[in-house]
Image (cartoon, rainbow, N blue to C red):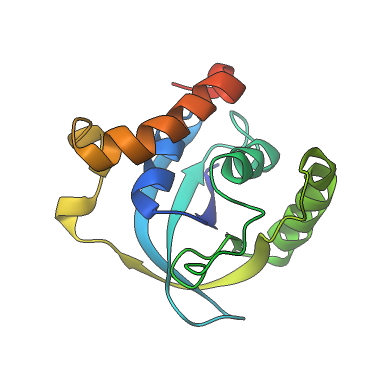
Length: 159
């Protein structure tokens, strides 16, 4: 069975590349998500994953460690730090995971758990952005450092 979860917090090109790199992730949709609690669209991805290969806790931990999950900066409307859930079970589980992981961070996590409302897929030319354009300056300067964190902290989870 394949589950899905929405994740947002930084550029959706970065988030897409991170989650495309993981074992157990079958598909990553990249675009903009709105939440029932906050209808404005924000850059995010929907991750389709096999919970028998990679669980929700690992996905959320990777998400927290690869974006500024404790920084309430001026671009938070565009880059809302969030876990977008599809049901009450995911909502409860995600809150428990964030609570469990909080002691590993020096500052309070600002990541919200929100109910998914809608999704707008990005234009075709921006999908699979990193893996189609690894030599572009944005990929080298912004995405590569995030993938380096992923390799260092979660190397056993990478495809």
